[in-house]
Amino acid sequence: MKNLIKSFLYLFVFLSLAGVAWPCTVTTTGVSFSNYDVFSPLPLNTTGTVTVNCPGPGQTDVIITIGPSPNSGGFIPRQMKHSTLPDLLSYNFYIDTAGTAVWGDGTAGTQTVQDRVKQSKKKPKPLITTVYGIAPPLQNVAVGTYSDILTVTVTP
Image 1 (cartoon, one colour):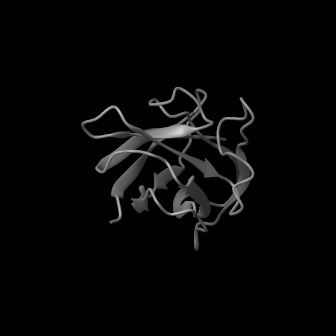
Image 2: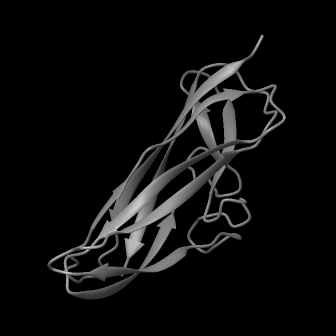
């Protein structure tokens, strides 16, 4: 019998404007790990996106950070909390598909994403960055719904 767990992660956006008018918009997709099987020897992988759109013309360099988990108080590991029990399910977000670089704020062994938004009045081209989520296998946690809320910060 499989022990399945439903998990959701919510990414909230915070724009760091540093006292200047910044006309860019930022959106994120919620990241869902779907059903986690505690008996599977394989990690559970998922993706989400952070989209930055700036009106043109020109280019804007941005730094995108993802904050620590309030459930673990840090980045490694981040943890989702069970909806009614004290159980925590470990996971993390990475800037690469292999899961070698934890996406954070540049501290505690994490990295940030730095990129350029190309702007145009006629045909804006948003910067769409993929968030790679990995939940390690064989975690002994109770069945139920797990969630976490993280803050995405974009600075010019």
